[in-house]
Amino acid sequence: MSTQTKIDESLVKYLQNVGYRKDKIIDDLADETSKLGSVSQMQIAKEQGQFLEIITKLSKAISCLEVGRFTGMSTLFIARGLPTEGKITTIDNSDEFLSLAKKYWDLDNMSSKIESIIGDGVEIMQSMIDRQHSYDFIFIDADKNNYPNYYELSLSLVPSNGIIIIDNMLWHGDVADEKKNDSQTNTIRDLNTKIQNDSRVDFSLLPLSDGLSFIRKK
Image 1 (tube, rainbow, N blue to C red):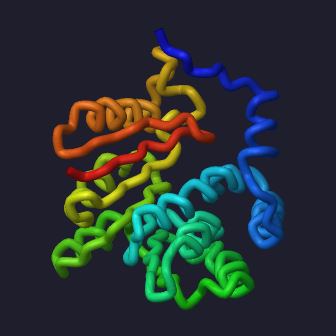
Image 2 (cartoon, rainbow, N blue to C red):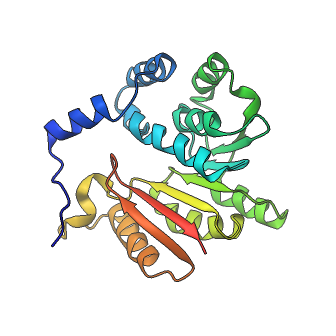
């Protein structure tokens, strides 16, 4: 029998208040992002970012890759978890919000650890494979219909024991609703099943914010 706690609105608020340690730079970045309007929903939750920082530290990652930058909060958290010589390369198909991201990377003295690339995620990741690049940790939070491609490409970019984390894997709860059959929901639902049955990896699907798939390549 599952002992999973049902997460309702009051518990979400509790998690946001108690599951995240207040941080002025992160809070200011979140506030400025919220002023962008409906697009601000693309930003990760602050408690997710805190989790990414801890995983980066625990894994002793040196080289990280991010697919999907937006206003750079996840980039910043991962950069914080890296040692002085560490580097995170972040890919996004637009530079629209790059100046906002850089503003906070600079304020937190993390810019020296961050390389930003503008372009198509699939094409850039394939070029990285062709050039025999390797990353200790990859975070994916980009266009959902390309998630299966990002997952496969990531498996070629991390070594054994490398970590892949994918955001939005519960997709607002739609993955559990059989009536939801739009392309994004079906893509994420199918990827969850694929990961579950993929003998190349160990995994855990975590109900943190909109769902994180935590994956270790064997």
